[in-house]
Image (cartoon, rainbow, N blue to C red; front, side):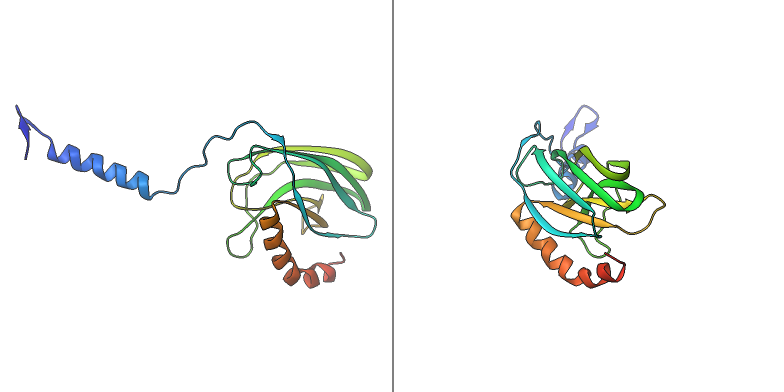
Length: 173
């Protein structure tokens, strides 16, 4: 035990070591991302109702890995014909266990039947695969999805989608 005057340093040293161990064992917070720059991206499975489509023209990201903490800007066009209105959303399907959806507020916009542009800006909240999707205005399951990201992410989505395609077709997509 070290003493200087009436101060005892062992409890303070143990507290410091415990804090360092906690920092080491805790998951790392995403590091601040740089500014988004034009980034190459792959497209995954596309499933839409008749006449509907989403086209991504440009993706800017702070890294080509599309990982947690990256800043993202997505620009493109939608073409909605299957209903009078819908919500267009940028979403993340999480890698972790069903139901796979990461419940994080995501960029969205209300759209009407027809063609129009979109632009979404977001900080990617976790690990997974990004998609732009149509959702019914009154709530409910997706009306159509366009996945995008790295080749690795699209390989994962392709495996996931193969099991869900029959369910989606049963919902009228």
